[in-house]
Length: 147
Image 1 (cartoon, rainbow, N blue to C red):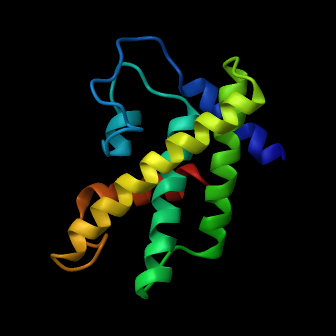
Image 2: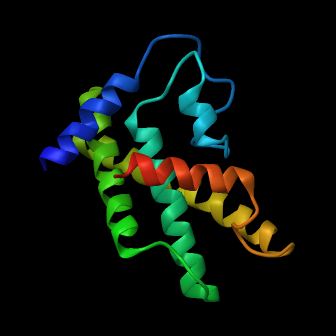
Image 3: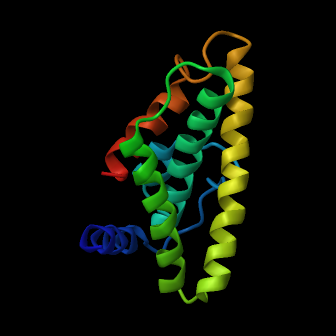
């Protein structure tokens, strides 16, 4: 739990006030390194937690349906923690626990579908996530963010 609270505190530290991002990283797959690595508004932990969970669970779902490799058990557990921390982040911003839970779940389903759509498109050209620079970057970001 201490590790989880540290992540929440770090997530709050990511929030700065500046002009809004041009793209909503919970509605389109903007590379996570661009979302969190550029000047301007940097979203809070909830965005990273939801995006990373969406990616990891989408990869696991793809693996279950199509075979091949997928995320490790450790990474799947970290993704679940990421969703929980996303709820905590939103309650810290003033949402009730119920509202935060529902909104994180809704955003997760949107992100999950975005990744699955990308995997489907990529699979027609080879592998669902290998060779895709956006997905490779998001995987790298999430491995660090979910540690």
